[in-house]
Image (tube, rainbow, N blue to C red):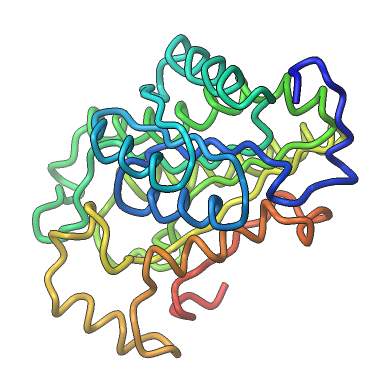
Amino acid sequence: MELSEQTDFSKRTGFSEQTVVVTGAGRGLGSAMARAFAAQGARVVVNYRRSKDAAENLAAGIGGVALQADVTRAGEVDAMFTAAEQHFGTTVTTVVNNALADFSFDGDARSKADTITWEQFDAQFQGAVRGALTTTQRAIGGMRSAGFGRIVNVGTNLFQNPVVPYHDYTASKAALLSLTRTLAADLGADGITVNMVSGGLLRTTDASSATPDEVFDLIAASTPLGRVVTPDEFADALLFFASPWSRSVTGQNLVVDGGLVKD
């Protein structure tokens, strides 16, 4: 498909018509989401910041392309999108904002209210909010031209269930939910939907590898399913917001945590 071709994606919204950028896809949850999109026939851009080898191996295995970019840097994001468009010959239709600033889900090691610094908050806001805004702004033009766009942001259930003192991480994801809803209102008339999928602790990603087994066991015992959600299960739920069945759904936050949080 040539970049100049005007395709009515509003009528053909299957995954095979989509070119998907998954940020932070070189490892962990992002890699599970990249595999999930590829399994449905989408063209997938495996974005990474430092995990070059892992990203390239994943891309080779799913028929995608691995592209480096720090999503907080507009110039790098622009270069990534341009390379993706040239590689696949079409505009990016779908963006999954998954990239996470360096963080470890280890409650015992996290800063408490009396010691946490603004620099820690700023790092998380840069990764979650600035990163999502940067990729979204770069994607808008192509999505408007196509009359179709899907933006899915990755959140957390911790602002409904703040059981651990991840003050910086939780605040940044709460801000990302606000951005999700304001963008949904702003871009809906262009055929672009913006939604969020929020997980609990996942078993297991690089970020949750430091979590003690007893914490996983406690969470599992608290869920109706009696187990902790896996990255693959989370990715399955995320596909809904990019699918034809979500064409009238925008500004929403779907919690995928095995039923732990009820609202």
